[in-house]
Image 1 (cartoon, rainbow, N blue to C red):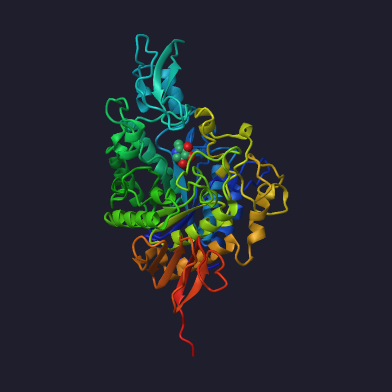
Image 2 (image 1 turned 90 degrees about the vertical axis):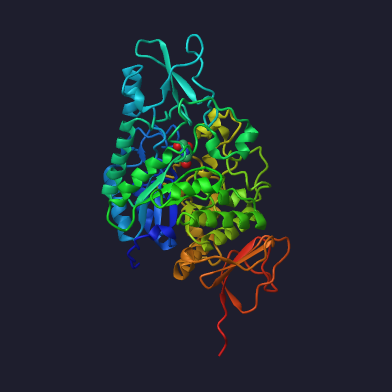
Amino acid sequence: MKRIPRERDWWRDAVIYQVYPRSFADSDGDGTGDLPGVTERLPYLAELGVDGLWLSPFYRSPLADAGYDVADYRDVDPRFGTLADVDTLLARAAELGLAVLVDLVPNHSSDQHPWFQAAVAAGRGSPERARYLFRDGRGADGGLPPNNWRSGFGGPGWTRITEPDGRPGQWYLHLFDVHQPDFDWSCPDVRVEFESVLRFWLDRGVAGFRVDVAHGLIKAPGLPDLTLSPEDLASLPTHATPFWDQDGVHEVYAAWRRVVDSYPPPDRVLCAEAWVSPPERMARYLRPDEMHQGFAFDFLGCRWDATSLRQVIDTELRTMAAVGAPSTWVLSNHDVVRHASRLGTADPGRVTGGIRVGDPQPDRALGLQRARAATLLMLALPGAAYLYQGEELGLPEHTTLADQLRDDPVWIRSGHAHAGRDGCRVPIPWSAHAPGFGFSPTGASWLPQPPEFAEYAADAQAGVPGSTLELYRTALRVRRAYRLGRGRLAWVSPVRSPVLAFDISGLRVMVNLNSAHAVLPDGWSVLCQSGPLAPDGQLPVDTAVWLTPSQPCG
Ligand code: NOJ
């Protein structure tokens, strides 16, 4: 495969594949995916046609939140490999022309991080405590949490420690799990440390960072109680809360931009994971001197409805263009119900919470048909796109996982109200007939794979016309050849039409979200299709096509 050097601003239309190392490929047979496993499969990613990969955390961690609880930002957890394995992975990726982004988790560390351990040991008022958000409790004996903030996973957002003298002491803030104490970003040590962590990985050769909870680092001064009702929270801008999307985050990212820009081209990039609304607030993260990309989560959470999709796409393109940023599309990741399943439920806009065996089960065939159409829509849009491992196989969510096997802290902390995210994190099926579907040489797998994964195995789809894997390969090849990610979208269908149609880079894209077949225009031939056409040549419901002007005969 010929390696084409990356353009300086390659990220503007890049397709990045998210690898969740724990569940991608296990080289040593212990049932947990690892970095050598990723390296072995890099040729598969190159052949798929993506521009790079983002590795979810592989750092030293107790895995209380699957690695988003980092105990050492500069080392690899032995379960995932070693720093030498990272170097091997980066070298192989470079040979294949693949950019590698790593995950950066700056909002919180693990409670096993030496800084947190030192903070607990050092006592009230110490410089060590100043790196985290320790506060005295309320009430006569300090027995009540300092404020009423809740953890995003459920339960209180504060936990009380025992002081070195054995007495009940201060409380620390954790917007996520109890094992994930939030840093205090007003402390200079924290800023210096993270700039150093950025350089550590940039010096090793990474192409950039996906920034976890990018909207969470700064909290409102004085940590005031949250006074908004659930209705307010649903309707008000995210920054109406005292802990999300506070203005102070932007100077952090401007400083990081200076760090990444100090490296030679091609550009090293920052991609924001920021669940903020309205979109204008998201655009602030993507101003020219801040981050390069930020996930368009409104697209991920959009209903399967033409008018809604068009509105989300238009708003996203308009608001990001206003700051000169590309849109960064995404349909699935390790936190949401896989889109092949979500789109087969009655409420595709419900992305989190997971699906349990007793819940209404997704319609697998319908979900997959829509997922393939949604992917063709996404990959035709201007901007960058992120894929989540297994979506190129049309992999569904594991919706019948036994509750006692659940690992996600969401399951525990929500008091079993939410199944959590394990269903989208099940190890990948590579071979239909191998033990563990080829995930691991021994067949071991940290979460069990459902038997139906055999149908989706990569080796059952490779080279099979019409398979989801071949659809992704074709779409990525055509997208690159026509530079769709750099194109300008021009709607052809009228507003509120249930059939979306637009032109981009000389191609016409159509997605039928109607309840009846749609007529394809004369003078165009099908270049790529998410499913078979009807016998009369029309476009079936829940199907998408990319069309090219027909060559005149003779
Ligand atoms: C977002 C990550 O994607 C998710 O997996 C994690 O649980 C939270 N941030 C907390 O780090």
